Length: 472
Image (tube, rainbow, N blue to C red):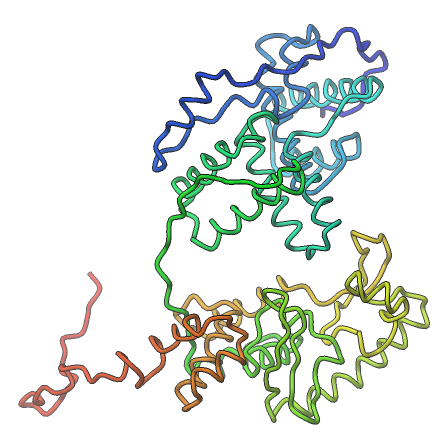
């Protein structure tokens, strides 16, 4: 089997041609700007996307017929490093080889060629670092710059990551740093995303905000105008579970997530609002749930179901034992937002700030490097809920957000006014809440009686005398 070991006699730095690719010509840039919005604009060659591209093209160590295979493998490696936020180097290459290359059976010639490509890359990396050159791809540099700028401005971690992903995608599409600096190129990119991926209106706004942040916070532009026309998409009707379906899902859910699902349905919480709940956020005696820094960084108050007051109190007692165990072991306190962390340095160690649904295992905080106990993973809960929906044989595409939709719809069907539901859900505009009038039973169009039900019964007295469907 091929090995990743570097050669004992690495090629000297002078054998690599360190050159940058030429920017796009004015003619090609003009043709890209004149492309129709409903067509995919031509993507420029990615010679400036990876710093090793020009060196590979001019390398005398690689045969001409081998260079396309080397470029394919190294591009694959760059994608792996970017997605896992790794630093280019031997450790990243070894992980890539173990997880991606050896993850499935390969032909011997593939392993030999790919191992040679990795060895060439490691030699290039050593010489590039020695020369003080950049080793990260354009995507990684753009993403890192955006996340650093977002961190300085106190943006939430998920917002930083989302902006970073958008700008990294934009960098790959633009193909070079000079093209990235043009707002017209950003407009072409957004138009391409709408045409190619058919992204929703909300995703379009998110991408526009990410690119505007890039131009202002990273590039230092005071005012930015990205000439793009947003394409509005139709509002989708929410998926709602009937009361019987809610019961069936809750009965089949893994008991580890039972209280979470009941609380999400009973209080109308979003997924991240649920997993981020702290001990202090639930007042079981008064029946109040306080959502901190919800969507739009807004706080709100919603109700705690009567049936959950005792289970919540029991959970808090169990959490106190876990909290005392963590404190005795010297574990770092839970994560706190920056301002609170500076104001209350020991706040993360107090019981009130502990997560109501903590993770079973501790993990390393990617920002501070401290080992602490975070909240339960939202993906694990979402997977468990989808499995419960499948096990309940419900023919609906119901995610965890369907419990929030069902909360609002069932309140509306029970006579609660729309303004109260808006406050409980935390909607900024009542028009967002009015979507539930389209799915609530006996309200609006759903309250109309079908003319089929007014037909006279058949002669045999059976209203359901319909010819059954037979396969084949």
